[in-house]
Image (cartoon, rainbow, N blue to C red; front, top):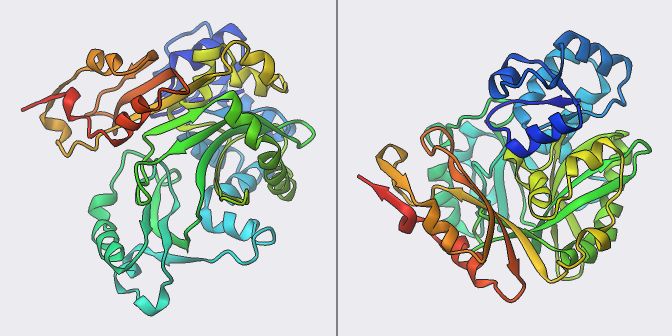
Length: 388
């Protein structure tokens, strides 16, 4: 069944639920977001009873906001323990410490960050909320100058967000050693036998070594096949420790030049946030990740990418890095944006005064055309903005 919550649900996901008659929990928020009475709505109490009596029932949430419903309705369940062990970054590090015994991390309260002594730190490191989302409050600290800048940013006023505390809680932070290598995001699920089934592997592109933004993610047949086996191996080990079955997830890992994979985090019960990575191959290749999870199916990548082996499929997240206050923005030119891409399959506009992004772009591009991704990766987006 589906648990739908704010901030956003896509038409693609709604169509998937409708076309396959999947059960959807009739929460007040879900009914507010989706005003289609023809869907297979299921009463909240009935849904909770099903999930308690049959804990292997497949459950997918489009948003981590929905985890609060699970906490409230399934408080003593194994599912809640599994979610908490993955969502809290300190608990997650403790969970996988046997796999990475030398990995350094520590927990610290927000109010204690300003008083940390340099003797207590080892550069480089990453500092981020223990319960986080959307790269908010994340800083890569290479040296003392970076640390001064990070501390200036790490204050309550700068860390305000639209997300509830179970999604983003900046009360505590984790300081952990910097993981070198290329970053990848993975949509996958643990099947009814607890085995990992990959649904996508996306290369997270950065504009610099200190960039922590979520601007561009790209996938292709080559990217998936190159890393598939090694990623499955490490994710299977983690899943076994938590007894994960019929469990969708979105992992972020780094892979160094020697091929060593180190997990950054695993996000429970969802694929990429804001219906992005879960929709990508459905929109571009007619491969529906949600259906594959609910039907316990494995992708045949050769068949799915047939005729598209030399193509790259990307998500562009249009975060507002322009420096222009949203209240002063009059218009965003999505037509001009579309013209800057080889094949923009879909552009999803969003209201920058309501959400922290202008929207999302789903693109198809040729391997030789890396420049369009590089350009948007480093763009401040001002060329598309009309403001006061």
